[in-house]
Image 1 (tube, rainbow, N blue to C red):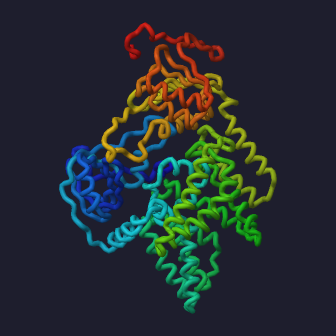
Image 2 (tube, rainbow, N blue to C red):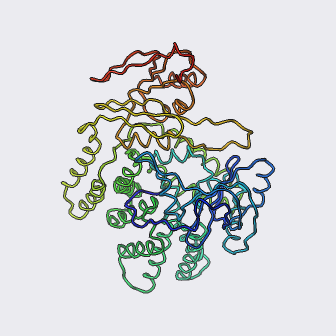
Image 3 (cartoon, helix red, strand yellow):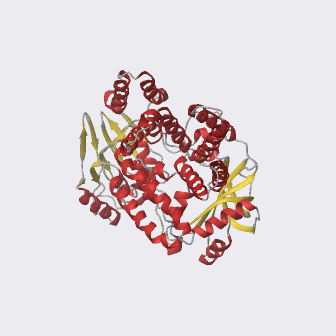
Length: 563
């Protein structure tokens, strides 16, 4: 994921345009989901694109699935289009996300013209690894834990990791690189090889690992840091850990300046730098104390990034990490490696995966500790970064108070300075209107996209929805923690298709239906409302919100609710 910061580096320079009807590129990544194929293609030295192709027949899908490989050269005919501009403020900017990956256009394929095999050693190695992993039942988690590929893990599970503040554990980072290096060094030591040879072999292996994982910023940082530390150790340069870190940062940004926009880069470097600075207080023989302090420091320094990007923090993530850090790093990750060597461990790994999924999903439903903060001016987020470091260097308790006061002020800024506004949220087809007045919030309709059921093979595993991508992020960015009223003008899918998803994932006090008999969609929502004990009303004539009065037109006298 990318973070939206000042975009001085991002420039558009493309060999494509909207008139392009034929495309040829090298496949750097691909995924099948239902009846469509998504391809990441390298079309020139400095440009990539993302192409989609929809299969007409199951036989065609199975044929392509059997022969498609990373590195293949594919030619498609179809249409080129610009990624859609973000139309709702404070939500995910897909166009910007693509541009920092050197993607300026999207391609909608209509026909696969040709597919040629690439005998490049790098791609042959990657394909061999992927093909081997695909034989395991736990392949989705092995790919996530060892390669950083989350495409096959259920989106709801991934969302639960983020809600619980533990998603960092499943991004390939320094922990995995360090563990792999230690395994090699200790293994060679037992074979009576010199420690120096162990470090040399570890560096060679970690660099190979870097390329296999597509060089994510966190892995690049860890590999460079390990290399520089090895050089420092055996050449007696006596370079401090801080200077090695800064040198690693400089090299990383020289390799790819666009990493500055990458969320993984920001989390990895911010947390790592903080832990280096606090290494003295973390150097304890008491493992639990070290783990607790590490969890607290990591949480505090990541607050500004989380608030700027997701408008939410989970205070209980400090506690959750006390369990999940050793569970993932000491059990899941080593077990994933051992499963590749001893395939009979696959079922054992699956048991621990079920424990992870069950507990994470259950914990993510706990609202306690989840704090929503409105988006504010950029300088506030900079101050969030500065205060902990001032506290560390001066040891003055005034900075603890300052940090707490800033958090409290930021959390309550909407209450302190209330605003009345009406926002028409662009949710594509349908309507959705937010009315906010004196701290009371009403959402009129949710929008929704009708999904037509086709054959089983055509169904996608995790369909995108308006609520998760637009409505909830926008509400959070405005500091809205609950909807006092959800008004559904009528039961068509484009007006209330997202209502169930919204009620399941955001606090709603009351729901108002129009007059008339409930249709199937409305009945489905009412079941959820009854389960959650949310009050609902129908045929309301008027509603008072503070000094505002809303009048509802009755639709009983109309044959069509859209009239």
